[in-house]
Amino acid sequence: MPPFTTMLWRGARNRCPVCGEGKVFAGYLRVARECTHCHAPLGRLRADDAPPYFTIFIVGHLLVPPIFWIEKAYQPPMWLHMAVWLPLFTAICILLLRPVKGAVVGWMLRVGILSDEVENPLEPEQTPAAKSPLPARRDG
Image (cartoon, rainbow, N blue to C red; front, side, top):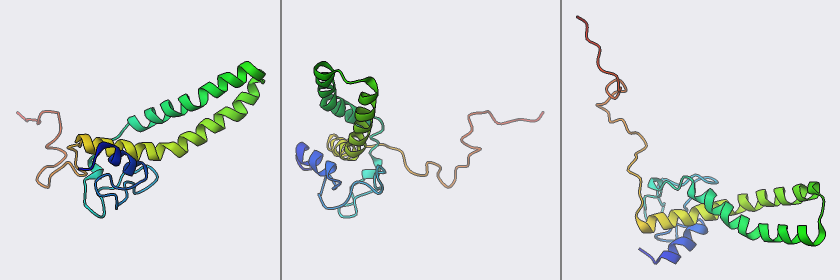
């Protein structure tokens, strides 16, 4: 495994954290099943809520100080704040979410946090009725 910072940087640039060749994402935010180059199990990494949390944290720390400074210095009307800051927050969050998620995938792979879930949890011999939590019905 490469060093921690290398894996974060590769993931943030949409490169496989292990080899740096394949892509992390198959869509805008959908993680690829595996690296096309080294076959690292990227699809088993479940980032869930961490990327949006880190993105909001970063963007908030970047934009809240200027908002407070402009409010104190110029006291613009509230409609102007909403017209400027809300679209700016939205745009920056959308632009940062994918690199942050890629970095989180690199971090999770480095730490070894892999999900045990498989795409089709039902094995061929199991049926949905066999997995039912209700007891079997007995006549008599």
